Amino acid sequence: MPNDYSRRKFLKHAAMMAGAASATATSTFARNNVNAQPPTTRPNILWLTCEDMGLHLGCFGDKDSETPALDALARDGVKYTNACCVAGVCAPSRAGIITAMYPSSIGASNMRVRNSTPQEDFLHGFPFYLREVGYYCSNNSKTDYQLAVSETEPWDESGNEAHWNKRPNGKKFFAVFNYFETHESRYQSPSSGVREIASYPPYYPDTKRAKAVWTEYYNKIRDMDTWVKERIDELKKVGLYEETIIVFFSDHGVGLPRAKRWVYNAGINVPMIIRIPEKFRVAKQGIPNSISTDLVSMIDMGPTTLNLAGVPIPLHCQGIPFLGKNLPPKRTHLFAARDRIDNRYDFVRSVRDQRFIYIKNFTPWKPYAQHIEYCEKGAMMQELRSAHDKGTLSEAGELFMAAYRPEEELYDLQTDPHEINNLASSPEHGSRIRDMRKRLEGWMTEIRDVGCVPEWIMISRARTDGSIWRSMRRGTSNPLNRYLPVINLLSKGDGALDELGVLLDDPEPVVRYWAAIGVGNIWDNNASYEARLSEMLSDPEEYVRQASARALCFMGKNVSSALDILGTALKADEMPVALHAGNIVDELGSIAKPLESTIQSLIEAKEYIGEVNRRTLETINDPPTYPFS
Image 1 (tube, rainbow, N blue to C red):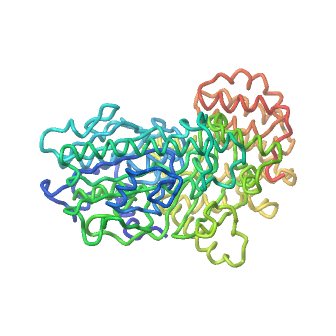
Image 2: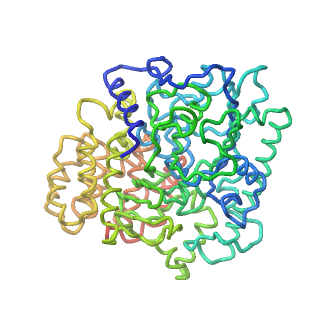
Image 3: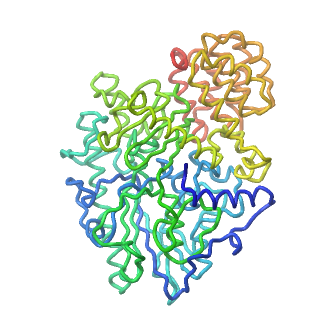
């Protein structure tokens, strides 16, 4: 289970919030004041962040990486080898960093959901609390926080010109500078040559173009290191180096397929270096040229920053401090999530400890490499598809191109750092699998993981109840205790059919939705449920209607009525409604041929809607993608 200190804080605040119409975390009673410090003893704090990068730095042992500035910072500070984000993609990860809460507990785990889901009024970005005690807070310049509030709200200044040197005289500062040039978009169309790099993952193609992408990735890291030196030199020039705690990290792991957007260690493990001047060190913290193997979640970054500054930590924070005074027990496990990525729905969770990572694919009938238009434009994804089609992709690469996934994955990060040898079915690891499965579901239940709630239902409930966080805490029972059992039936095959059939009549729409998805998955044996599924085409819940239509189409029963439901949904004004229908229609292949004119009319629609319909038009004559066929 997650750390008890974090659990106590969160549950205390959850209980308070459940019975209140609103709450404000600025009140002193909602803050942990144990480490409050006077302003004169507080440090400046500088964050140097970058994007889309793994532990490919010289100071982390990568002999192919040219990073003299970061290597020097590491000699003067501490390297963290087990720091991990909570989502392997920028916006959900940054939502976790700025709020110190799991995105899947506040409705921020789907990609690009900002302004669609109301949030609680206690949910400030953590720099808000630094400003309360007199810090000047600047952000240069990326936000991407996924919050339905102004993304500049936590800052004195946020933008391309923001800088700590604009602070009033004498003010302590917290400043963030973000380096964008390591973003995947900067090396997916490589212009440089190829050099042999030892860390080249075995699941990428053995082609010149693919290796040129990896070479360009290293070139961007080298350029980023120059930028780091410039930012540090600015401090030294004005005599603030010994007055400033410096923190370097990436927002998530490597920006390439099977890493970015995924919850493999390659996608969540980030490089982190922290340099604490001697005057601000506590106990044995911050020892120069040292290595920490402690497990650190990126939702811990805000609470740790507050703790180092002597600022009370709000009780709603799920992150915990790992530096400063009066620390809680260290984490024993880290958690991460993957939900909707751009135009494709998914549902994956992971938990890792010091050595092993366990992954639960809640929708294993989906392919690993779903067609996401943004990814398909990148050279590495194109090379993966080409090598797969030609039959030249390595066995490790073919694992990622599989049409279906195992329900569970387990990897030994010590002996198998590229996460290729799945140990989930190994009797030797049976007890470990059971333990990590229990921990994962315990964490999901504790945070009331909204990934169990289909997107439009989540948004609708948030608008009714004020926030999805509040909606998940109505009444006295935890909804995960109802949702997880039915979701866990989805990959159990024919043996689960009768149980799923009963759940089609459940009064809870979320349960009916997943039951209809499950019955539809067992497409060759579910004709006995034709009548009930046909009735559900008139269900009051939109997504239940769509899930029932999907099942009927796979069964070949009442297809015309089912396609009418999906065709209407494709044209809906609400993006999640239309996108969900688009994902289903894309599965149907030639079954959806009667909807071709509707699909054609939507290929120029905005962003994700156009993307999914353009892809469907390409596959409209293909056989259906039957689950587990």
